[in-house]
Length: 434
Ligand SMILES: [Mg+2]
Image (spheres, rainbow, N blue to C red):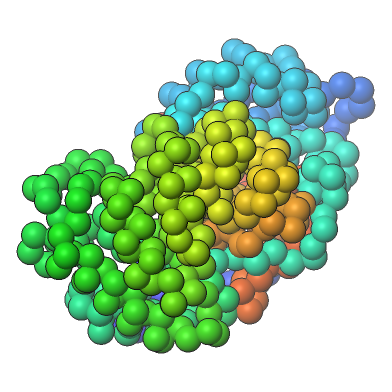
């Protein structure tokens, strides 16, 4: 596959696309036009590309931006639902504003609107204080943040172990220099499961994300294990391999699979039982899997609010949590989860594959302040690629040798090139930047 695929599908940045972006890095922060308490005057939402983008407007010339996953272009009415709750509030009292709206959210996808608003509030608070968001969250404990590859992908040309090995070799060579790569297997990878007849004891189902579950056949399990072995052979001990597996596995299949691949030193097994778009976790079942294998067990990307992580954490049901700041309730919510997890010996690997470029910025601030249970966050690419032309402030290249350097501009430290971004607005959202 040629350069076109890397740029067109993956949204990687190179060549001419980088030029406006470089100039943008010197962009001056927005100046506050008043003094005294700041008030929220409006809450707006536009769908830019496929990403819902939130703009919290204030009476003092500062706007804050937040973003939700590109898989949720339907989110605008949910965002606007919260407008009457927050207009008139002081956005720099982030926690007080959040008290008003956090109760009116739910597991993925319904926590996204609240989460995106929270990000925008921190963006405003940082700009008003003249400080980067990470300073407001307690200050950074690392100058660069490790990312893992869940989004820089190359098309699969088949579903045999050899195809998975070849594809993994391409990801290993990617210019970002990832030190950890995640691949979908099992029920999280419909193509892998469809490639062999009778991989599990149910008929294949369609509709929504990850609709299949059931008991694996011996043939199905052997195929998954063979693909994992082939990928690991390519990576050796140079680059870590994590596996996004479900949801949909039975407890016993999960244990059999985990034990079968124990010698391969897999970094984690994600969402085996419940997970993406499952509106509940099951701590007792996860604990049984976790206690039965040496492979780290991971879940959490769909879970909303710290309260819903309590059981998983306090029952030590998993070894790694992967909440997403665009689903869990925001950046500070993630910090609470990370700290509580750390007290219980549980690691953090924030999810974020579809979070877009503002999502990357939020993740960098979060990663800077997470305790030492932090592993890496899932690096999102801008899609379509023109996203790199409408956002200012990200480093270029963004990822160097698997890390992103933490920047120190106020707020999230990234913002829109309004002139360029305005051209990408739909007719319906034409007034978004006004
Ligand atoms: Mg996942």
